[in-house]
Length: 174
Image 1 (cartoon, rainbow, N blue to C red):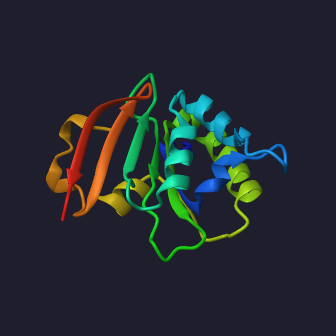
Image 2 (cartoon, rainbow, N blue to C red):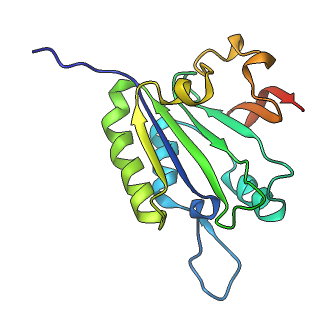
């Protein structure tokens, strides 16, 4: 029997502050969660996680967006952060989505499980498969040149990054 391989997509919901680790109780300093850093390294995705954390600490929903951070190698691997926080959400949940090629899928699944189970004290939402992103957003992010404003939900902002630089942006205001 031939083994079926496909690209893997993992979507989870967790409080945004799980991206940070506070090494000292008496200091307002933090580091990026180490397993999240390993996932970024595995996917070869580089972006300023501290910028996102600081933005969310300072203004919950005002500056929210769906940010797609692509691998330095291709558009087939990326991390999506949907930073919209409902004003009534006291746990500050965001969606984090990972996508990798099949060859890294096993490693990504292991790291994502560790990241989710070790950092999120609430088991709210975790999904993995091969069409998780398309099923939830209806957008094929592997083809950024084909995305158009009509694909984006009303009231949403979508920003595409590669190497921590914006290369496309949409603001579908209401």
